[in-house]
Image 1 (cartoon, rainbow, N blue to C red):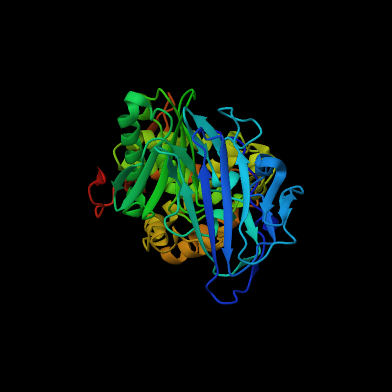
Image 2 (spheres, rainbow, N blue to C red):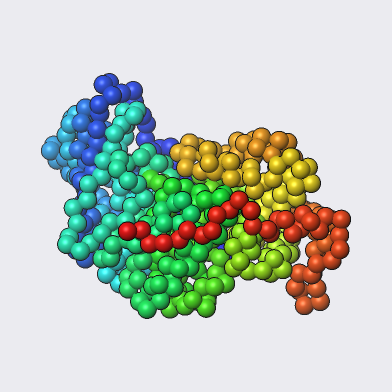
Length: 476
């Protein structure tokens, strides 16, 4: 497991601002965005129609430091920033406002979230969380549009198509500007728009794209197809040592950002599960950070399983990874309950405990569902993804578990959560592993023996017979 860098605090209600009833249902807001060729400055003009903007809120912690002159320009004059917002007491309906954002010159600025800003050659990862200031109040049902004016040869990579969704303000989002167009990949019923920044990994560009496509296909082995109709993928080259790090984001639309060694080769990528893990996240709607035990647990558990189903690793290696992960989770436990550690995971650096205890709960639920013979966790997740993976609603663990339990025909997942979330101990997996005939060999490898539920052990890793062959190709 790779430990992620510190994440930015989630956007709070004060930044999102308030909504007001629509007076006519025809209100519009246009963001006119202009980028300078060297990616040092972004100018934004906001033009409302049918309402007035009373305040602009910084889109994320730290973004306020990038506001040029600490002010917003209006026809009545300039208004200065106060902490993380700019009040506009004299603004009028249908009146355009302007501001500019100055981007750091450093490749990696220590004052900013590294997952929001990074330079790669002449390109840059620049999340909208840094430059898309949030107008308040906004009429309910407001139609928003973003128009980019770009220098010749520069391309904007943003996760939404057409109108700008509210989730671009509510949730962390992805975005980049590069000098190469995206590469579209059709994968198992979904479409990826792949943007490789900088030199695009030079001679290894094809290997990186193949690895991304492989991860997308592997994740599809759980959902019977790619979990969402389309997703933006931004691959950022750097001087990483070893495997990559990634994150799945939902602000403005599904997106995955992956940081890779710029010298990554097919041989090193073969054992890197980052892409598979992040694409699995897209099968569940966005959950709050305190529910990391659920969304990270599901992705961690199924990362091993779908790679075995796709033939990337063997069944024995997949079980070995699970055994090793459960042991790491157990040995890295703290004095808090799983629920509390999940809620404070970033601050406590409790990644091993939360990821692998969550994976253990998914494993126990998976086995119990197969024992019951009424439905499997696999099928429950596939049905859930069909209805809700692309949902823009606010979800919580309890609501997700209720859906999955309903699809399995019994409250299996909820029962596991109730049993272990408020305990300090790591979930008890040894008895279930013995029943499956899975144990650790003398050199740490997974060994299999005769057992009452050996058929379940093998079925967990077996590909779905209904799953079609991989459909990975470059879109024309």
